[in-house]
Image (cartoon, rainbow, N blue to C red; front, side, top):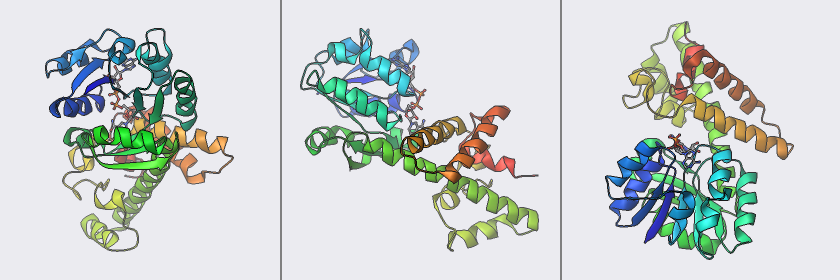
Length: 293
Ligand code: NAD
C-alpha cells in the first residue's frame, strides 16, 4: 500500500519504520531534513511537501506536536488537502484538542476526504515495539478501513466513537495519569520522611487499595522499578512538558463543557512549576522532586 507519513519525530519515526517493515511504500515528509534522511535510509520515499506525500497515497497518517502544526499540515497551500485524492482516508495520531480535529474533519469532508483522530498511548518504546494503543474516532466504516494498518503499529486498536472521541479518551486518560503520579509521589515521599523503607512501602501499596499503574509499573521513587525512568535519573520516558501539554488540553476541553477538573488544574500547576524550574525535559515522574528533602 502507498502510505503518506508526515511528522517523523520521536513517535512518528518508529511508527513509519514499522510500516516500512510491514512492506508498505511510505511517502515521507517532515520539516526536519535529518529525520527525513534517516527514514529514507530505511527505504522510505522523500516528498517535498505534505501535498506531494499525499498525492497518489491510499492512506495519510500525521504525527505532529500540537494543533497548530496539524492545521498547517492539512490546510496550507501545499498541505495534505491540496494533494490528497477524494475518497482517501486520513488519520491524525497527534495529541490535540477534540474541537480542532472535528473542524478539520468537516473541511476535509467537504472535498470527499474522511479525516479522523487516532491518538496513541504507549510512548516511544511502544512505538518502536509496535505495541501502541490507538484510540480512534470516526465512523465504524472508516475505522474498519484503517484498523489493519494501525494494527501494524500497535496492539490495542480501540474504536471510541465519532470523530474527536479518540482525543477525548486520550485527554481523560492522561488527566488521570498526571494526577495519579502526583498522588504516588506524595505518598512515597511522606513514607520516606516518616521513616519507612520505601521498598516495603511500595510493596504494601502495590498489594493494597492504593495500587495503580504509577505505583506498580512506573514508581517515581528511584530503585523500586528497575525499568522506570526514576531508576535512570528520570531520563527518557514521557517528558513533563508533554504531560503539561496534555493537562492543558484537558483543562481547555473541560472549560468548553463547563466541567470542573479540580485536581487536574492543580496537577497542571505542579507540572508548570516543574517546567519553570527547567525540568520540563525530565520524565514526568520527576514531579516527586517537589516533595523530596
Ligand atoms: P516530536 O516533537 O518528537 O516530533 C514531531 C515531528 O513533527 C518533528 O519531527 C517535527 O520536525 C515535525 N513537524 C513539526 N511541524 C511540522 C510541519 N509543519 N510539517 C512536517 N513536520 C513537522 O513529537 P513526538 O514525541 O513524536 O510526539 C508527536 C505527538 O504524539 C504529539 O502530539 C505528542 O503529544 C504525542 N505523543 C507523544 C508521546 C511520547 O512519548 N513522545 C506519547 C504519546 C503521544
